[in-house]
Length: 509
Image (cartoon, rainbow, N blue to C red; front, side, top):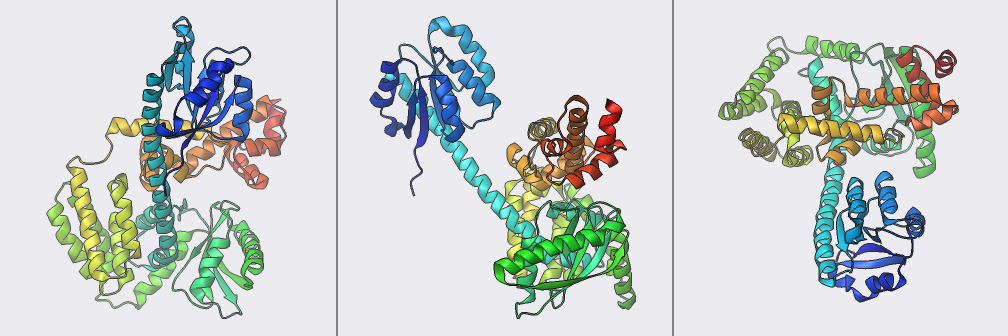
């Protein structure tokens, strides 16, 4: 299907010039269509409130609202439109001022048709590149979402039961899957979910996970162990407060149950078993139990940590041939013949390496790994990932230290400017053109704090400033700081400031 023509808005208070630009220029040959031709910047501002265009072509000086003011409006409100201004030689100072507003091009009066065609053909090439980038990013985002969904549904239950997975591995793999959970501080409880219909367990689990509202509570529900009836899941508290875990789990499951009942006629029941102060305590207890029942001759769990250390040292030293031999050895030793075990080994080995996510191809290969059900193909994917690391080591990809600092500075600015929105790591990663997992690790390396911690800190600073300097109601401040749940906002603010929002405002006064 042919791409749609780009939309252009023409703004000029001279009717003859305005109509001439709209009718005489062969916009179709340049890949554009005229969306509207307006006589003043004020009309254009009203038009842009309800309609979107790709380019605004405006006279720089008009009777009421100038093209310069229009360019400033577009710049300050981040309207995704490029601006081309028409100016005369005597308006050079105005044109210089417009540079601050990212004006794309200038056309001099009297307007020359050849120059118009040259400018807009160049703009079309730039818009085409941006469209291709957006399409690629959309495909990358869809692929990442598929991969994270697969990892959460298929790999995570295996990881949590894996006796080879130590504490550091679990923390890193949580991060890779996009779960900002610290197993050393987060409470957890085992949840058994049952249902009376004939729906398969995998279908119920997928529907249940899909029916949970994102960011709606302080509890995350994770699949745990083999999928069966009843369905076993882990309720993990984002806040390290054991007492509220059961209450919050009941609340989100009640909401999910209502949605599933109304949408697909599925009725579920659940029971929350023993609650643990720390997720890691629960995992260690289960791991110790499995180790006690294992044969005494099987010392693989005890060797795994040392073997991973050898693997990392080989890669850091650039000994990729040795790393390739180790890879085959680890698959044979720890993976055996079970496909899920082999996948787990490879995800643990490659998922802990920042460099895998620095290159676009790394994410694509991991997605292939997640989907594959063929042992030989999985082995080839592992070798391909290793070769990608080798090429990156030789300088074909990746960021240098200065570029990394610039990326994080740009990401922090984006966070501050969009703090009132529902910010996600993927949103920021898309803005700076990086893989989310790689950005997360780079962010922590450069700032000393995690992405979520930084966002929370910026939101709390904004909330404190609004409490001190404005008369906004607390629920309004909650919304401006990017929170939908006032109760959650109260809890975070009290932890941050040591006072509730109301108490903070009273003391500030």
